[in-house]
Image 1 (cartoon, rainbow, N blue to C red):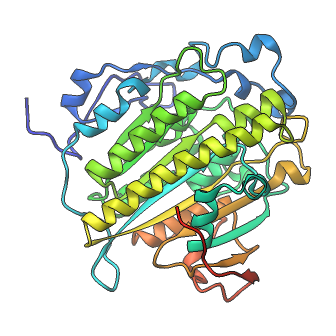
Image 2: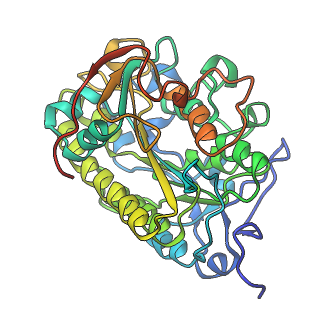
Length: 396
């Protein structure tokens, strides 16, 4: 067996599709031998076309989280039960990212919270998300007329182009759009092959994006569903555990994670329900744990400078569902906490389309001339579009 290497990786398994893409979980070979992973699958409440997912889940669709099968079944991905152990098996590497003016190496964690509305963060007074907002910059805006469905929205987050360009209209898609509009993982890898990128997600279609292109994300983990986990709280904990392990033990230059339980609550009970608020409270705890891991990593590695970005893909109707153009469905927010962002700035300037340009800028990669988004570092001091400036408060 050759020595472990972050760039010299073997896939767990692969199968070529009709477009020449290979659906692999890209993991270090020793990990691949120890953890065979599982088949990809489609989440029931993400199937179908634009309005198909509107409203609460019918019983037959809500009973089980992911029936096996579908286009993504050709991937083998690390399961949630072994995700943290798999990431822990990766070697701790020396910093390889882009240095700031003060000499510290920049690193970014992007937290995607499916179906979350910022006004619900405020309603439950979620301490960790409010703390990140206070310590950094917060943009709140609408993504209309963009399609308010997860597939189109997360594709926009990870490419920096709107749905009208990448062409993804629902949650049934393959890697084809990412040949023309490469993901942030591919763009970073082309700009600097030494950068290490991870994707760790509850929704397995995120892996369709992260494993596309050349190069693709170095590590792609799709968390396995957990039995008797109707609200997805347990599977999200497994995802967060893997993220914390990756940050603590490995320190990738860019890590994207996706947590799903708020969206599940919206579909099952509605955006105005107590169950939705309960999911927001639970997800806030996980965000706090991830942020604490990042902060601990910075204290242990003073040569590193970490930015945390947080966003969502869409909101939810009071009765549940999304895909339309109401204010509750198109609402969007971006939190940016790091040394390049002034604490306490709230504006209406940026949205999910600006995430990829910001990550590229933070990590020293050139901007994509075809991008619809803009780097938030262009106005890091909040000099345009300020709504209010508040003093940081509270303790995580």
